[in-house]
Amino acid sequence: MIQPPVLDEKRNDKNLTTSSTLPARFGVIGAGFIAGVHGLAAQAVPDQFTIVAASDANPAAAAAAAETYGWANSYSSVGEMIQAEELDGVIISTWPSTHPELIEQCIAGGVGLVLCEKPLVLTGEQALRVWDLAAASGTTVIEAFMYRHHPAIAKIEQIIASGRLGQIDHVRASFTYFNKSMVGTKVDPNDPNRPWRYRADQGGGALYDIGTYAVNASTHFAGGVPTRVAAFGRAKNEYGTSDKIMGLIDYDNEVVGLLESSEVSDTNQEIQISGQYGTLHLPAAWNIYDATTITVRSSIAHDYRDQSRAFQTISDTFAVPASNAFKDQLLNVANVVQGSAQPRVSLAETVINTITMEALAVSLNEREEVDVQIPERVATAFRQSQQLSA
Ligand SMILES: NC(=O)c1ccc[n+]([C@@H]2O[C@H](COP(=O)([O-])OP(=O)(O)OC[C@H]3O[C@@H](n4cnc5c(N)ncnc54)[C@H](O)[C@@H]3O)[C@@H](O)[C@H]2O)c1
Image (cartoon, rainbow, N blue to C red; front, side, top):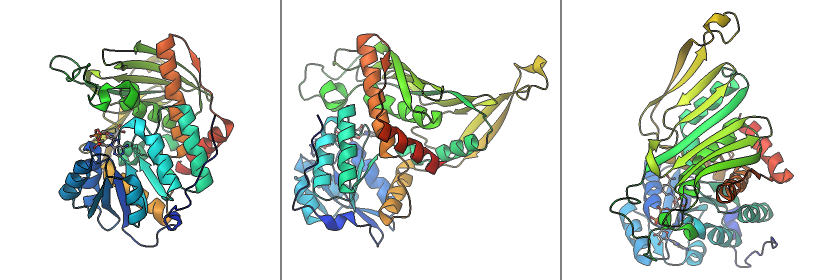
């Protein structure tokens, strides 16, 4: 049962106005690995985005990150940081299971923009609560799918919009890597303080850690609302997490999504989008370190002039320059704070992603096909946000 939002009387409503000055001023919550990646990205765009403070349940981690990345202040309390600093927003970079409470605390505290690491939350109920709280408060909440800000993704959107692929038929998205800490010399499954990736209660496991990217890309490029899923893989390993999930997602526009996610198979980060006139391929979608190339492969006979050559193909290539997607993400966030851009990743997409992942997890556990129930208000907002980004 979703409760109505309770807003803190001491909330800092000045943060809810759009900023008139750059750089946008942000505080980090959770000063671990990915906070450092955001710290480096912010250093690349100092005129647009600056991190001024960090808070962490472990004060030593906050102080160490502040020292390393040149952030002015560090805190052990999120509330204290929000009250003390004049922030345009925060970056939440803690373990997934902590996100719902922290997002709620930030909204209640009057934070204007919350950029929260993936997965934003772990259940559909939590996602809808964030949706309702954000709508009631005016806080912008963005899931930090950094890959969506890379120019390769904008190029794919252009190629699709140009009609080069024709009607999209299916989307295959993969995120696999071989986690050697799960086999051989490994993290102890009986250690109660083992890292979050090895704990189901903190949001570990292939689906929520890495598969979430593939589900997001599948839905974004399918351009439809998911209606049902079926998943196969390993529901539980010795950490109590699922380290392998392969899924099918059926969309309301008859596009089918194919998800591949595994922590025990070598690295694969491909997106493949197949339409009536061709198949688009991006070799690595989530972590793009260098310049890359998108390929569109088509049958010579795709316009039906020469069916005898239906199985011979030709390729077009599209060069994409190198770019740091984390930096590009911060630039989008700075523009959203300024009121000059929409978030690249809408909250509607996040709600859909979360409900779809929950259905995939149920399908894997229960060994059955599962219906995906997206509330109409969310589906409508998703369709609108897809049109805006087209
Ligand atoms: N976008 C990416 O490429 C990427 C890569 C890695 C991790 N992530 C995401 O970033 C998040 C963090 O992962 P990480 O690997 O950086 O974790 P981490 O363990 O390195 O750091 C998390 C930090 O959060 C702190 N913390 C935990 N609970 C807290 C709370 N309630 N309040 C304040 N501080 C708290 C911990 O003390 C720790 O310092 C996860 O959601 C993960 O999925 C994203």
